[in-house]
Amino acid sequence: MTPALPSLKPTTPNFSSGPCAKRPGYDLSRLDQTTLGRSHRSDVGKNALQKVINDTAEILQLPEGYRVGIVPASDTGAMEMIMWSMLGPRAVDICYWESFGQGWFADITKQLKLENVNEIKAGYGQLPDMSLVKPENDCIFTWNGTTSGVKVENADFISDDREGLTICDATSAVFAMPMPWEKLDVTTFSWQKVLGGEGGHGVIILSPRAVARLESYTPSWPLPKIFRLTAGGKLIEGIFSGATINTPSMLCVSDYQDALDWVRSIGGVEACIRKSQQNLAVLSKFVENNEWINFLAEKESIRSNTSVCLSVDLSAEQLKQFIKLLSSEKVAFDIGAYKDAPSGLRIWCGSTVEQSDLEALMPWLTWAYKTVTQ
Image (tube, rainbow, N blue to C red):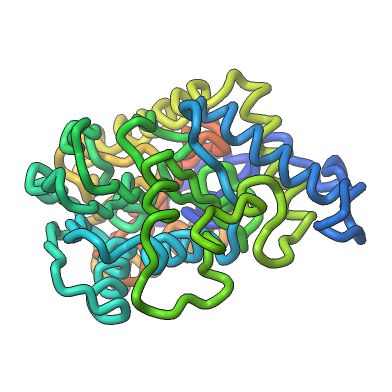
């Protein structure tokens, strides 16, 4: 007999891990449209870009001297710019435990062809031994593995007396997890992750140590214009003051500003972190009460509170049917595991997702499981 349908559906069934759900109460018509049709280099365009830069720094409570820049091509573009512009003078420790970190390793070894590279890796659901990171080396790592549901527990592995730079891909962690900025020399993220912004733009946050590297080191390889962060041995100030390298979407800028205003309205980044942790608690309770579903990350302290990855006791065909049922009932969209990750589910629990929607979703997971296994 087919299980009865649950009575309540999520109001917003968008649980994708990127682009992520828009903020609660989002209304496209409320975006500031005064920049549309105007040059991004006009006063109104540059002012709008400078405001999102300033607001990002203020809301994230960045230390004095840290710089925020807007760059092309999302978090991927931001990371590639940094790797091609800054790596080379020191050995590199690359830590990864999921597909994107593995991609950075491949770029460093196969594209940049750096030779003094230390691979510190772990499989999906695990965290590598971060104590292997050496303070004299540059270190690249993802704060949160979006495709594995595994985050670093803290930044204790980073030495306060380090000589190398720390380069952190934090696209699914910024605005959702506490970030120890003094430990991070370069941080990258994208608007379409934690804040549910529109895609196409990346953000680079530089510490004074990172700026010093850029201004004192010139890579031996040629740099395309879109990767250049310096000119004449000095930082290109425009990138960090609203004069972007290429033309940004001013509608996306307005959308990002709307998200930043929302963060401020709910109590800042601390409120976002708390909301995401409460969302994770909903899934944790469900997993605890159901033997057929488990976290991909077995160790609780490394479980992501944004991109929550789950394994399900189903065959590949049953899992495909499970996901299709939830989508057809319009209760959960885009929750399949990443294509290169182990088979399972990935449910976004960032702060733009309402706890009530996750609570409404849980009975549907049970319904779908019973339906495909009956």
